[in-house]
Image 1 (cartoon, rainbow, N blue to C red):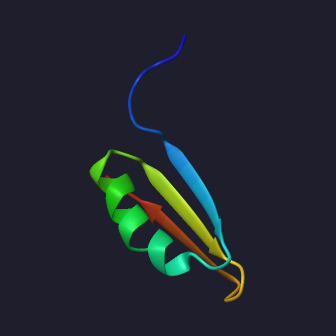
Image 2 (cartoon, rainbow, N blue to C red):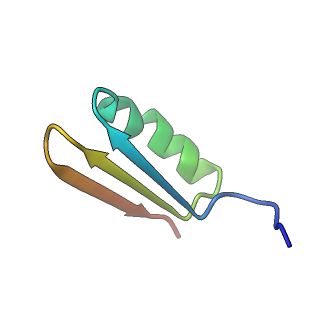
Length: 53
């Protein structure tokens, strides 16, 4: 059975797009009901994990 609605988890590997991924996309995903969003910034070797409630 397929349920409709927002995605539960989105994972992004950011090479050149970290600024966009951590601002515009982050806000859009939160606004649209995504529950968790992970961004791995390769050049900074940093993992950002957002949980929206």
